[in-house]
Structures are given as C-alpha cells and as structure tokens.
Length: 233
Image 1 (cartoon, rainbow, N blue to C red):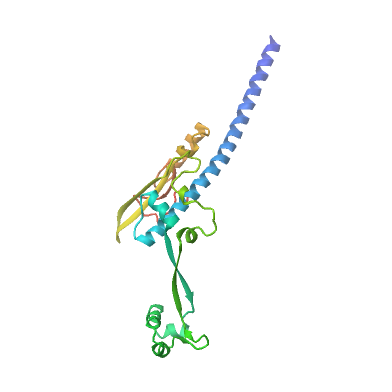
Image 2 (cartoon, rainbow, N blue to C red):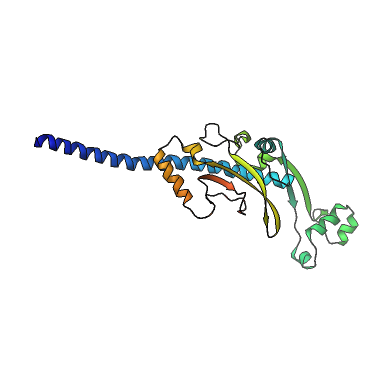
C-alpha cells in the first residue's frame, strides 16, 4: 500500500512539474509568437499612416477607402523639389526671402536678377534653382523597399485575409475642425490561434492601460488628437 501511495505521489509530483514547465514554456512561446505578429501588424499600420499622410498632402484629405489608398500608392505621383543653391546670410539679413528670390528668378529677366544680387557669376546662371520633379508615390514613400506591395496595405498580417478597419472623421479642436483617420484591428484577428488564456490576459492588460482603451493595434484616432500616433507608441 505504501508503495502504491509513493507511486501516486511521484506521479502527482511529475505531473505538477510538467504543468509548471508547460506553463512557463507556454508563456515564453506565446510572448515570442505574439511579439512577431505584433511587429508585423505595427509595420503595416505604419505603412498605412505613411500612405494616408502622403495622400492628404496630395489631395487635401484622408481617405476611408483602401482601394483609393492602394491606387494612390501604386499609380500616384508625388512632387519632390530639386534644390540648387541657397541664399547667403547677408542676403537673408537684408530681407531677401527664398519666395521673393524665386519670384524674381522665374520672371527670367537677367538684368533684374543681377540687380537683385541673385546671379551666380561663376555658373553664369541664377543663384537659385528650384524644380519640381514628379516621382512614383511608391518610390517616394517606400524607397528602401523595392518589393513593397501596395495591395497588402488593407490586410492584417497573420489575419487570414481579414482587412484593417479604416475610418475618417472630423473632430473639433480649439483651432477649429480637424480631419482625422483611424486604422485598427483587434488582437483576436491575428492571435486567435494561440493560447486562449494568455490572449485574454493580453487583452485585459491592454484594457487596463490609461488613455483611450482598445484591445488591439490602432493608428490614429477618431476621438482624440494624437497626431496620427499608434497606440503602441
């Protein structure tokens, strides 16, 4: 009888050790895998923000339509300015501004340009050159990622085809109306196949944080002025 009791005690001890081990390893594995997925989702949200800010600079407003945003990145163009030459400190102190200098230079009257002190004798040309060059939006926004696919913008990494929620609204500030955008996805979208208990803990931890609570990843806000920041920043 004592022998059987010892065997049962040994088995119970082994089971307890195993469960503790699994619990520790489970936490480590969950943290590692969820971290990988979180970073992928954050990068995609940063890409959405980059595209939205550029779209607004080109059109004057954000868009709540991923098809429009994707088409802008794929087929749109953005102006970059080629800058040659700068005003000297003396010219700036005398009240010359770049806007005024370019107004004079663009009139094309060499005598007027020389009189204004804006002629470069060595180059035998005006002192300043400012030319707008139109380049593919994708090349301008993602220059170090030649394989970047604009078609991926709408989709949550590890989300099995689920799209981000994208919305645009106007909020009122002391300075007046301000258009804002928001892109988000809940944790369940891309973590639901991981440990359910640990996922619930992650959700609760996010909800316990101060500020605007959202159990997922979000960039921008429809209710607060966050300057297009993400809730992970």
